[in-house]
Image (tube, rainbow, N blue to C red; front, side, top):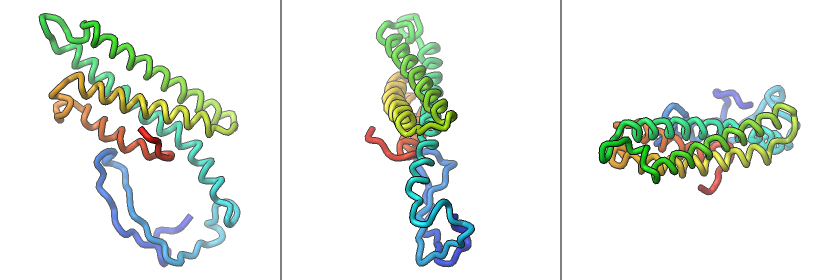
Length: 184
């Protein structure tokens, strides 16, 4: 761990973000920074396995965050589709729309179960690399696909700030890089 006031450590720039606006991302520059022995994490020159172990814990957390975004998007879409009417009945009652709602509900439940499995594996002290990676990848892919469907459901309102969906979409894109990037 490097104290913030260490000689040779500079914060070059802090970035404003498109999504997850409460997060802080900075460009750091290290120039001959000395790390006191008591601040060393693990053995000297053997830190990479520690980072990998941390990523194993981070991936299920990122997956849970993505699932939360997907759940919120889903609930906003279902509310909208339940209150908006076409031809005298709620949009959600149309077969093509109800199939999409059911499909997203199944994917949300599958994400939840994969995240719970990764958490159980971690809780038992077993290596969770695979379980965490699977949970994260599945949650991200389905959140982004489901989010695109949710965006399309309210049509013009999905691209405005009238509904919270636009924020969920921005936040979901940011979450794809946490715990290691995935192609999505």
